[in-house]
Length: 326
Ligand code: ADE
Ligand code: ZN
Image 1 (cartoon, rainbow, N blue to C red):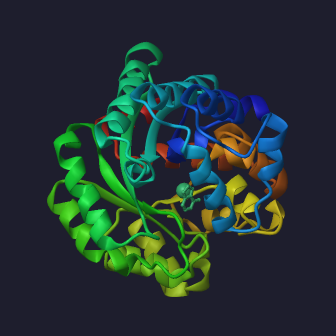
Image 2 (image 1 turned 30 degrees about the vertical axis):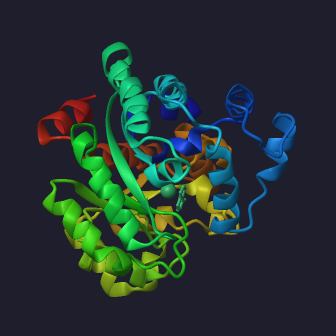
């Protein structure tokens, strides 16, 4: 099965580029850029990755991202992830980045986008990997700050496919960002949002009804609302599920309790993704392997999940068909 997962052509739709910062690169960049981080070596860093909740992870994740300073740093980070994609037979990626994590430290929006995009273009050229970039607003900050970020992005619209919503979910419901999502839609961006990771099913409904998103990131608490389940099935609204993330952030106690198999059996358009692989102990294939082992998924299930990953993407119908034939 491991070999089957490895060889299967896949897309990844829920991946935070800052979450691919491996401890080795974090230490190297901290040294190069003279940034103070509270770790001396790789073991120190790994020891800190013992999370109790989403917030306990985010605190460490934002501190880690502080070592990213120059356009080249963003390029190197992204290129390292794309090489991993090649290794894992990931043919298409839709990558999140959090501009506010960087602009709030004085990094230019353009440096972030251009560094990431240069690596994405090279991957298209040299590795045959296609991609889209999705800019996420930090939901623990205000809507006005998200609007400022949206305005900053407009000169770079060519590089950016859509907008998302991430960071601390509890207490920051989608409705807080109604206006900025409307503005983003008017500007021609596709919209997605993290919802139903730690927040309850009402967050998912708000993301659909108030933000009008076309995909839900995580969304695993949808089972709490039967009407919502019927709607997700009927409208085939994709969920980008991240099993190892859910386990590491204690959203589920054990992988055996994960509901991805039930959601799949119910007929939802669920996909498998790695979220922040450098922090959660596995890239995409390891996420597939973890659910196959714990939930006894069949090869047919795995194939359906990989097919879903292309169906749920923002690729054109003809490109989807091209990949699905593979
Ligand atoms: N930022 C990076 N990973 C995230 C996650 N799983 N949930 C919310 N915000 C995030
Ligand atoms: Zn995420």
